[in-house]
Image (cartoon, rainbow, N blue to C red):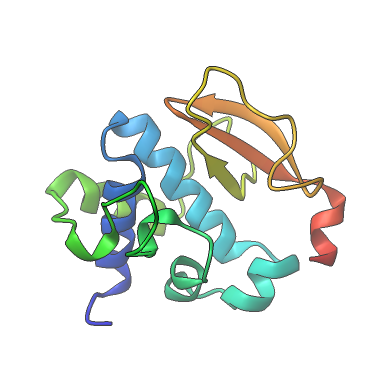
Length: 144
């Protein structure tokens, strides 16, 4: 893939949360970088501390699939602005959104309420930022 890690993250931020303001985009960027640095479980094993591996892991981000039903947007047709690059740089530099904890997952429920666990019993609800619900790992996540 011809994109640098910075470009790849900026494109993912724009695609997943471009319409959710700075807070929504920073929340998504925080989750991605939490996955890069998480020391145990699936993301440590598959991601190996590599941003590209985390973003490109199959089945993780709707915007990475160019065939996702109901989502014609994908990272390949995004045109990030300076703001998307600034948020990518902010996250890559080690910054995280306060209150987000160690969140490893987010999803848009297309409703006002969020599930209490996600993607299963390995994640518990910690809050909603804009349209996305966010989840920290439980102790069970270590065994994924």
